[in-house]
Length: 457
Ligand code: FCB
Image 1 (cartoon, helix red, strand yellow):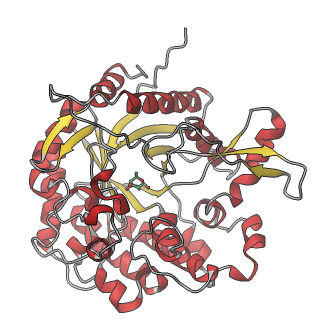
Image 2 (cartoon, rainbow, N blue to C red):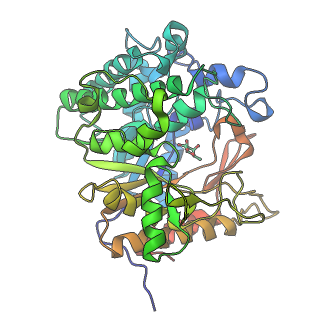
Image 3 (cartoon, rainbow, N blue to C red):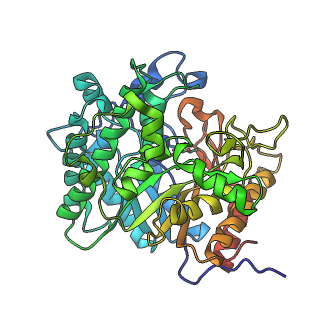
C-alpha cells in the first residue's frame, strides 16, 4: 500500500489576495486600483460584480484568522494592496493602510501562523494608469520598488516571507492584449506583440528591483520569492521520447520563455526569441542582471497543464488539444490534469536548470458549483477529488527528490474571482455574500485531516 506521507517539515497553508477578499474599497485612505475602475466599467465583470465589499475581510480578519486556526494551517499567503499603502501610486504613505496589515499579522502570529506576503497581486493604483499607463511604462518598476521599500521598512519586523509579484503573465499579457476572454484589468489593447512583451519585461524589472528593495529595507534576514504560473507541458506518456518533447516544448508554452527563464536564468529563452523575431521587447543594458536576483524560493501557482507529444515536424513536438468531454472543473481553462503539479516542478529542475531552488506551491485549487444543502452543509466532493489528485502529484515530486517544500491551497474562502466576479467559487469555505457567513465546506474538513496527519487522506 502506498502511504502518501509528507516530510515532517512540509509547510501546509492557504492563500488569498487583497482585492479578492478585503472589500473596504475606499476606507482609511485607500484609493482606487485598476481593478476598481475595471469592475466599475459596465460589461467587464460578470454580473457587474466588484470588489467593493468582497468577503469584508478588512473588518472580519479576526474571524478569518480563527478559521485558519481551525483548519490547522501554520502558513498563510495573502497580498498587500499597493493603493492602501501608497494610494497615489507614488509619494505619500498612508499609515492607516499599513496599520491594517499590522493588525492582521499580529493576529496571525497570535495563532502561530506564519505570514507570507505577496507585494503585488494585480491591484495597482489607478493613479499610475492615468499617469503613464501602468506596466506600459518603465517607470512602473521604479514606483513599485519604492512602494516595496515603504512596506518592508514598516512591516519587516513582523513579516519575513516576501513574494514580489503574482503571475506576471496574467496582469500583463492578459491585461493588455485583450483578445483574451474574459479580459483582465486594465483591459487595454496595445498595438503590437512587442508592446505586450514590453509590459511583462517591465514587470520583470519590477521583480528584480523589488528583490533588492526587500533585502535593503528588511531589518532582519528574510526570504524572497517570485510567484509564477508557469505553463506546464506534460508528456502524453512518460516514455523517453515524449518526455524529451515535453521539455523541448516548455520554453515556448505560454509565456515561459520570457518570464520564468529570465527570472531564474538571467536570459530569455533562445527558442522564444527566435519565435518573437522583431517583437522581442527592448531590453536595456543591465536589465537582465537586475531581473536575475538570487531567490530563496519560487512560488508556483498551478491549476492545469498542456499535453505534448513527440512529432515528426520541424519542432520535434506538438501541443495536443483537449478532446471533447475532457473532465474539467468550473472554469473553461480548468481541465483536470493532476500531473501538472509534478511536471511543473520537474521542469523547473531539469528544463529551466534550477534543481537547487526550493519550490512552494503558492496556489492550487479549483472552482466548483457549490450549493448549501438543507442542513446548511456544502458537500464539494468534486473539489476533494481534484485536490487529492494534485496532492498525490506533489507527493510524487517529493518522493523523486525534487525540492518541493510547501503547499498553499487556493483558496481559504470563496472570493471575487476577477472577471468572473462572485460567480466562481474557489474556496474551501463557502461565503454567503448576503450575510457574510462563513461555512466550511467538506473540503475544509478533508484538508484539515491531511494537515493533521501530514499525508493525503
Ligand atoms: C490565479 C490567481 C488567483 C485566483 C486563481 C483562481 O491565476 O492568482 O488570484 O484568481 O487564479
